[in-house]
Length: 103
Image (tube, rainbow, N blue to C red; front, side, top):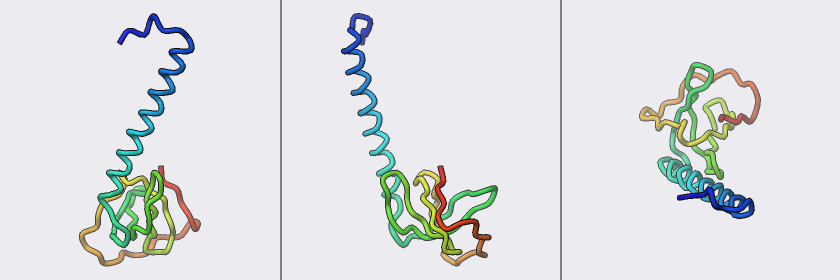
């Protein structure tokens, strides 16, 4: 695609369309990753050199809400989650606050 001949306005419109398409593709990928998990499923994720274990509670737009074994609520991107095969609870972690956001 040769963009050298496009005007400023045409380049702005092209940029807006590219950004919108990228956002849509990112949203579709996050949705597909979320569908690997279901509410009530046990999962784990890395945090500060260790792993936290919890239960999937709900889906958000880009994250999954997980409640850990010590009753903390975390919003975790689905690509950072791993399913747990052994559903026994682990030792509770030290609570730092009620709601966490992992990025």
